[in-house]
Length: 360
Image 1 (cartoon, rainbow, N blue to C red):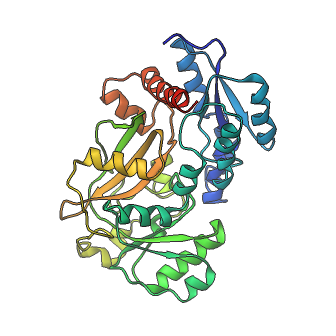
Image 2: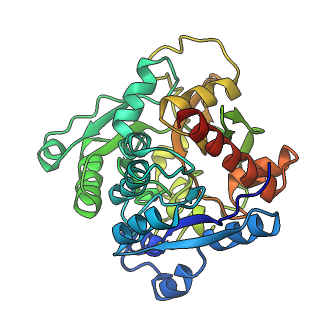
C-alpha cells in the first residue's frame, strides 16, 4: 500500500497523566506530573510511523478538544490514530473523540463510542460476557452510597472492588481486597467518593495471570503472555495494582505486605466458578478474541485472565485502545509474533482503513 499524501494524526489526551492524582492526590510521584505529561505514547508512535514511510503527527487534545477535532473537517487527514482512553484525564469524555470523528466521516483506529462506553461500564460488560458463556469471576455491583450502606456480600471472599468506569488500574490497591460486608462497604464508600459509581465487586482469583493482545481487522490473537509478579517483595499480593502496574513499586500508595500481616491469607483462596457456565469449547486465544469483539473492541486491545485452580481461564479485564508505547504489553506480544513496532502499528492502520473503505 502506498503511503497517504497527508500525514496521519495521532490523537492523545494532554492531561492523561493526571490519572496519577485521580488515583491518589497525595501520590509520591505527583510532583513529577508535569514531566510525565510530556511522555505521551503519541510521540514515539508518530516517529515510528514516519520512519516507516507513513507520515504522522501528534494531535494534542486539551480543554479545546471539540474545536481541535472540528478543525479536522478542513484538514481531512486520511486517518486519526486514536490514543484517547481519557480526555482531561477523565474516562467518560473520551467518547467525544470517536463520536465527532464518525460525524465528520474521518476514519480512525480503535473502538467506536459504543465500544468505549461498554468498556467503561465493567458491570454491564461482565453481565454481557456471562450471558454469552464467557468465563468471568462471579460479581455484584454497588451503584451508589445507599447501595453501599445496605450491601450484603453474596460471593465467597476474598473479593476485589474496582471503579466500573476506570482503566489502567486506577483505584486498585491492596485495600481493594475485602473479606466481609463491613470491609466491602468501607472500600465502596471510598471509591464512590473518589470516582463516583458504580463499583464492581468480584471474587478474587488467586492464580497465574495472562493477557492476550488482539489486533487487526478482523481481529486475531497475538501470543499469550504471562504477567509475572517475580519483582514483588515477599508478602505483597499478586495483583496488578496502580503502583505495581506503572511504577513496579507496591508500597507507594501505602500498600502493606498483606500476606504476612493478615492471617486470613494463610488459607488457600477457594476455587472459583465462572459467573455463568462456560458454554463453548474453544482455545484461550479464540475465547479472548470473542470476548474482545463482544466488548466492542476494534483494531487493537488487551484481554486479561487468571487461571483458577480448576484450570478455568476467568477473564478479569478487557481494554480496548490499550497503552501503545514501545514497552506496552501488546507491543511486546507483537514482537513475540515477529512484528516490529512499526509493522504492528501498520497492521492496526491497515485494518482501520480497510474497514473505512468497506463502510464508505
